[in-house]
Structure formats: C-alpha cells, structure tokens
Image (cartoon, rainbow, N blue to C red):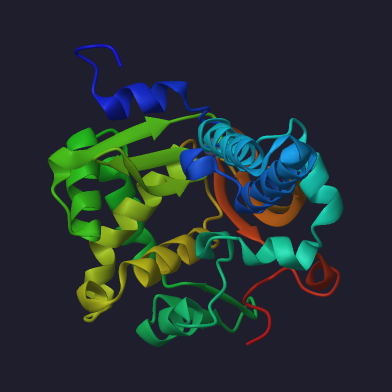
Length: 289
Ligand SMILES: [Zn+2]
C-alpha cells in the first residue's frame, strides 16, 4: 500500500468497475466460484502423489488466488458472460434480478393507489386511463422549477429519501443518471429528464396523498416511475414521447423491455422489464385492470 492512500481507495482503483461493485453479475460470480472450486480440487488431486501437505497447500492457494481475481475483476474465466448465458437457464437468471428490474406491483400496487388518489383517472372519452389535468399542471410547474436548479433538485431528493442533501452526489451519463450517497448508489434513472420529473413529482404528491411521507421509499419510487409512463411530452424538450419494445443486452443475457423515449432528443423516460411471452398479448401494464 502506498502511504497517503487509504486502503479503500487503493482497493477500488484496481477493481474493474465494469464487472464489480454495483455492476457485479451474481450468476457469473456464482459460476466462477464453482469453476474455481473444481479447479482447486483438480490441483489437489494431481499433487496428492507428491504428498498431502503440498497438495492441500497448493489447492487452497489456488482457490485463494481465484477468489481474489473474481473479487477484483468480477470474473475468473474470460468470456464468462457468454458461458453463463449458455448454461444458466433464463428462469434461474431472472431470480438474481434486483427488485428494481421488475417494476411489478405484486406487493403494493401503485396502479390502484394512483387511481384511488385521483392522480390517475378513467377518461370516458378516450376510454383510457389518464392523469388528472390539475395534477399535470402542478407537475409541469414543479418540473420547470427544478429543471435548472441544482440546489432544489438536491434538497427535494434528500427530502424524498430522508437524508442530508450535502451527502448526495450526482452522475450524469449517456443512458443513465445516478444519485450517490457517501459513495453508495442510492438510485438510477434512465436519464436526467426522468430524474428531474421524479423529484418534481415527489414535491407535489404529498398534496394528493396524505400518507405519502409514511409510505416505504421503494413504493414511493415505484409510484413516481409509473407516473412517467403517462408523459406524452418530453420534460427536456417538449418533444413527443413514444413507447417501444426493445431487447437490451445486459451482462449475460438479453432482457425484453418496454421503453418510453423522446422522439426529438432521445431522452429515455421509462424502462421496464417485461416477460416476452406477455408482450404478444399485452403491452400496456394498465390493461389488465
Ligand atoms: Zn426530448
């Protein structure tokens, strides 16, 4: 270790951020630890004729080095994502998904909640669900107020998450916008536009929902992301928003998603994993009410 460098900083500088930390792929890691165990056992079996102490020492050493490689690089065998894709059944891979990958509403139902609160209403003319016009104008004003005001964004997000605004950091990338708290990722949005509309929405929802502050943060985040489905104008450029089905490649498999994207500035406003077998019959998550 170099003097003047904290152990944490020097460890993170040799870690490959593409495959470790938040980006670590659990199926690939499990597969690699399995490979490391098999390989170390083979080393022991090969060296047993030269003496058990040497064999076990070499096997344990091999396993330790392999684990260190997996820890720092994210994988042991190059091309693991392809191997995992081939050998892990899709259903099993799905189990490793973090809940945020499934914007489902099995536990608490943001869909019904928004209808109960009157934020989402049944429009008899369009025969479809739509946002209450009063909510829309409040939401637009709040979005405008937050758009170029970094301090307002910081304060409102801190309020939503119940944290100190000074601990927040933002990271704006091409296809994602992330908020970090003390170096740990708090949340990710598909774009800065999506982030700003969520934060703006969180400042007006307490007027519509008396229980807002008592609801779990995960549910409040779900409600905000469901609301983004109703955007038909882009908050960044006022362009038209269109829905599409896409297949995106994540580490070791393909995901079927439904996405809402601005046709003018390409800002991604909403993204949800969907079961491809459902896509044939249903693309509107509000359809099955
Ligand atoms: Zn746009």
